[in-house]
Amino acid sequence: MGGIIVALLGIGLIVGMFVLRSRSSKGIEQRAVKVADLKARKSAAGNYEKADIQRSIDRINDDLGVIRWAKRLSWAGMAVGLILIALTVVVQVPVRNVGAVDAFGRPTGTVSNGPHVTWPWETVTIYDATVQTLVMEGDGKDEKPRQNVRIMNGTATAGMDVVVEWRIDPTVDIQTLHKDWRNFESLEARVVKPRLATSLNAVFETYDPLIAQREKGATPISLGTMEPKLKAELQAALPKEILVRNVMIAFVQYPANVQKALDDMQVELANTQVALQQQLTAQAQKAAIETLASAKMTPEAFAQQCLIVTERLAQQGKPISAAWTCVATGNPFGLAVTGK
Image 1 (tube, rainbow, N blue to C red):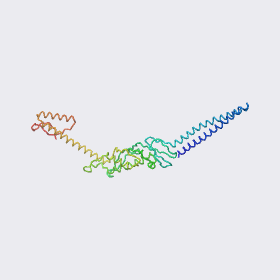
Image 2 (tube, rainbow, N blue to C red):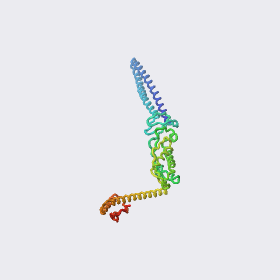
Image 3 (cartoon, rainbow, N blue to C red):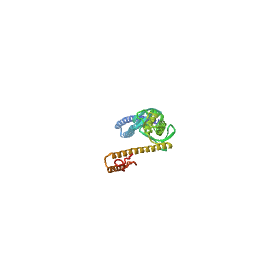
Image 4 (cartoon, rainbow, N blue to C red):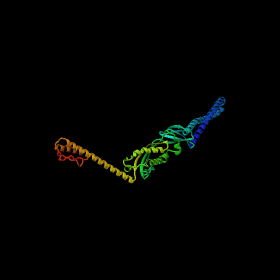
């Protein structure tokens, strides 16, 4: 409505200045003719009459000066009117933005970035089409709290820190999006956040971090494999005008009992790895002793080589089995081959 009023003011100013210019031009012509007539009469008049005619000519010249200034002013007035009209019909959409056009409160179109000409009764609402980052973490003091998500078929709830990168698709018509939500600022709070919560629960409802303990031969499910599923679910839930660029699960806070079970599983896994490494080390040490024992050397030379191998293992920081020994025994060389 404001645009229409400003446009009418601009049109009125242009029309008024045009009328002023026309009348000024006509007034200048009339007075110029009158001055020429007075000058002709002056040349034929007496001295006393000449003075009166000259005063009339001076008055007319003064009027002509005012009229000429009014004519010049009309140009400036028309320029102001054109500027007012331009302000109501020319719209500049910033780079990486799109605009939704309304006419009398109804969406009528979408414009891309750059200058555009619209009708005075149309308004353009700007939507930011750059990548937006929604970070849901912490205690929610900024109204973006960690998300509580149902897991393990709804038997437990985990807190998840989630990062979502989203944007408006600048290549599509956003009339429907604008009609439903009216402005860009409401999209994150009223569209992206609630649908993210719904998508999290839909994707993670059957997620079981303890599946490797519950089912024999089952592999633990990595959170990295869940992120693409969450992205696809969220994209399907959002309006087509909004694109999900990336979804990241930064941190998961499991319930105390689930976290304890995971910690115990990690300790057990670490112990298993240590036992396997010790077994491999013992086997390697046994092979080294057997290699030395099979060589044709005196017991003293064998003992010397065995000590050299032992020293190298110690320098490399490798564990040495308690069964490792370079002590002579009752074998043909008088040495113990006891590495296990």
